[in-house]
Each structure stands twice: as C-alpha cells, then as structure tokens.
Image 1 (cartoon, rainbow, N blue to C red):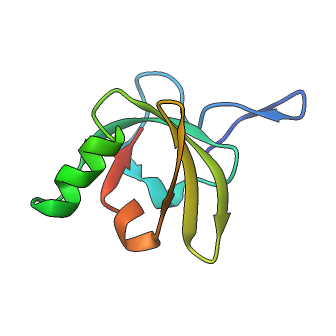
Image 2: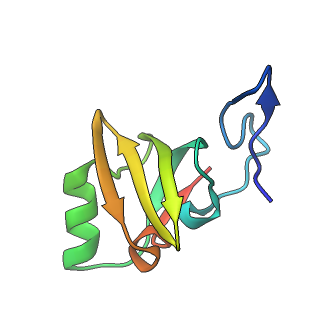
Length: 92
C-alpha cells in the first residue's frame, strides 16, 4: 500500500509533515516523491550513489517500478536502480 496522497487524480509526495517515518526507497510506488534522508552502507556503492545525487535533502521521484527495479528522477536525471541498491536509500 502506498503512502501517497491522491488529490484531484494526481499523486503528491509519499509523506508530508514532521510525522514522516523514514523508509527504504523500495516502499515507494510509481509517481511517489520523497526526500532522501540518508544512504545506508559503506564503500563503493555508497560513494557511487552520493555521486549520482542521492544525498540527504535531495528530492527523489519514482518514474517507474517494475519487477522490483526502479527508474527514479533525482536532480534532473533519471537513474535505474535494482531492488538491492534501492533498499539502501532511506527516504521520508
């Protein structure tokens, strides 16, 4: 079940307000938008995600989700992520 609010047929942010609970990016559905709160893990994957723009405060939108793989929009670019990498990105 998505945390997105539906207003006039358009999905808005996955969560709004101070009561937002951090969750993995994999919990979002197509059309949802959220803010990156942190990226879990260390090493090469963590560094690569930061270079792509997955840093605290960045807005991320799910463009498409299919079979656990995601295409997301972040900082004006679209990035493809598999489920294991997307689960390292924590959003609220």
